[in-house]
Length: 567
Ligand code: C2E
Ligand code: MG
Ligand code: MG
Image (cartoon, rainbow, N blue to C red; front, top):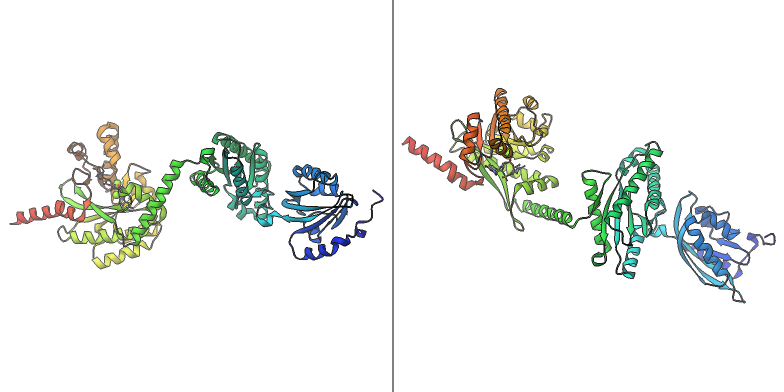
């Protein structure tokens, strides 16, 4: 050992010039390993990046041992021994080196053996590149990235047609919150904690990758199924709980997972697997977090159908509300049995799906916000229709349903006011129906606007959700509409009947009007009539119909009867 020449005195005339030139024109680190002198010579820039004693150093194996990841070291040591013993001339590895921050980064190391005159290995000359810069490894967590996963997936599926296993997409639920609260470096810390937990939680034949932002992927390529994935996820979840407990919940986080299985007869392209995994994690995090969802074809197809419906709705709205129509259902005064108005009900005849129930498409309009432009059209159409029918019945009222999504956009009122001015319809003839009292808030600018302009307000579907009488008293509601499901139960069950009776009595006592929805038969009418609801709406008096039919059935006849009475 003492016989070694000082590293700085060792020169390599045959390489030195080329080394210095190449070093200037590459981001890679160039290296020469001199077996005879047990000396390692590497680009200066590597000394800044990795904790190396110098750009030239002795005791190659023991020095490199300090920076090579313990899991990778044996493989490299063995290869260098085989090279010096002349057993191989190959050196081509991807492994991890510790950087000066103490994090492991992935490197690709390729070298060429140069033999001496006796044919023994004299030098290993080559280059080291950080594969993190090729984005195949992530320098924060030390994990491989999805770019490497794409390669691995292709490799495994091309090598082995019988491959089966699963891909698990894992996400830190509240990563954005952690970053906002504690800053990026604590966020990175959480990513590192997570990476170590994942590495420890997986079984053999499962690789861990860092995916974008706060997510990771586990790739199991040896036969494990969804149940195995679930138990791995449970281990991960428990480990996360322990880890957050250990740091006194200072950095509290939970993880969710989406899993896609693949099997020999069902190996998708990697893009399809990602697409499905994205959907599974979306399902896992949509309603609750800290949750795992296994991909289901049926749920995915329903989701895609909803997106297609949304697309068709958007196109029809853009094409001047093509394929939409308002139907009108009569509302009858219980006392006089006369028509007092109509509820406007939206209909859509899709080119692709035909007639579809509003129960199916209204939630899609709400989710996508499309209910806002369409709602303006509904108001315009119904207000103009009401004005027209007032020619025959001067105090004819129109009921218009409004969604809670519309309540968030106050410019709806501007549009309605314009239409009111143009038609000169008195707003007291417009009844705004709002589903569930929970959405009725007098601080809402739209509701306040309706109230100030003297529109009438009705609570729709009373009895189905959260409905509180006392609370209603403080709101300026005029009418409560009792839902069909309630009416139906009350006609069969004395207990429900009593509740309806109490609701009606109570409503009357605080001067609220009551509309019973969904009276279908004479028998139902005779059950509820004695309770004296103010209005009745139901198939018994008429189903929702297009405007012309409504006019024919409910207005013209009235009008001609009245005319004949006058004569
Ligand atoms: P809703 O506002 O409670 O409307 C009453 C629903 O009960 C209507 O269903 C009507 O056809 C149905 N109905 C009335 N009488 C009877 C009866 O005797 N028997 C039975 N079985 N059903 C009866 P529709 O038209 O299918 O509408 C369903 C829901 O879709 C509406 O419930 C409302 O929440 C929503 N919707 C409809 N049009 C609009 C709209 O223009 N805007 C908004 N935001 N939602 C709407
Ligand atoms: Mg309604
Ligand atoms: Mg209703």
